Length: 472
Image (cartoon, rainbow, N blue to C red; front, side, top):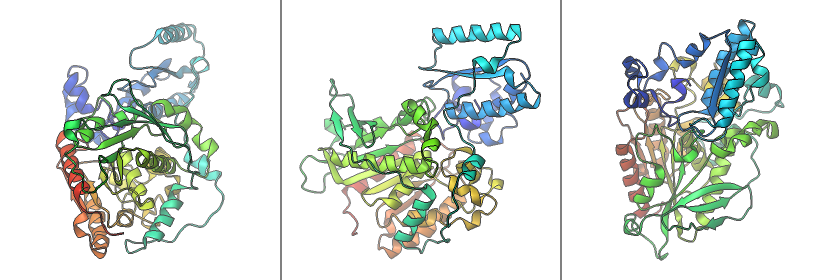
């Protein structure tokens, strides 16, 4: 898998983790590119390409904690293009298996079949066809779209309604929100998570603070034993979902957030863990919607679930989002007035300055690579014309408290532009008489969510939980 697709944006076994845990596996020089994987002179897809046109099978597991099915498929497509160029597309295949890292009996049998086919010169792709879980082709999607009006460009001075209208356009046609009942299933052990079913058949885990930690987020109202809560929206980790992965440089969210005194809900985003098949058919079922729109709707359903929990104070539900989850959080705060506040960690870089030359992947990644926000594809090369940007999106959350945490050496974002967006949104907060409710923290680190950053998040949450709510 490409190191660019396994860094801390995904919480996988990154170049840093690999060279620290297994220093003899790769050259020590690889460690010099920790936090700047996009500057590597070569990556793993080039090693695979050197095998061409000889027979090759890529074999991985859906829940392998050190693999990323989305990243594997991007590498496969790059290598497959080399095989096609050499006229031997039949010599490469991809096989998924259920389960974690260790191969099962089916994997050994498949590998034996591959070897026999390779020796006989038989077709590899026929036995191991490419059936991606994350299919995406922007040009195919674009050709299916009906002509429609593009909203006019707005700045941070726009009304909350105008911002919400453009966010809705960006996310695509709204997916009808479920009116399903939230069901809580108590665990057999008091220390285990409570299982939650909510929304359109979504499943999550609810973690309670230990009894001695429940006074950390002091109650400020008369709602008895009700506690503040956090909705955790994590990174794009396809194997572990919200539970992060072995590349995590800090504690797990389901550990450090309850220890801070907050009831915490986590659930797996679409395209991760047991939601791979849902991702596979998403754009076939919803060609006029977007994956990011689905993630935002799921988050709104999760807010419903938290509000239905008898132990949760519905006036003190906060959101903490990291990476992909951080971007979901920005849109959620602009559209939904229920969250009392949010912490956004490495969640965005402004659209209008995110050009191909920035080295981040540009806005093109959201439309062409991930397929999360296809509407942005029409603005590649014309980024300055994008109808809205994060200064207005952040401002739409005012006067509720927001924490923006942006590591200065995160290559997925331009820190200067993130700081400028927060500064612009600060004007909106001042106009809403809440200048101290928008906070920017800039750790001098590459992209990660380490223990120090988590401690800062927890301290900010505690202060926000005991403060008087802003006037609406």
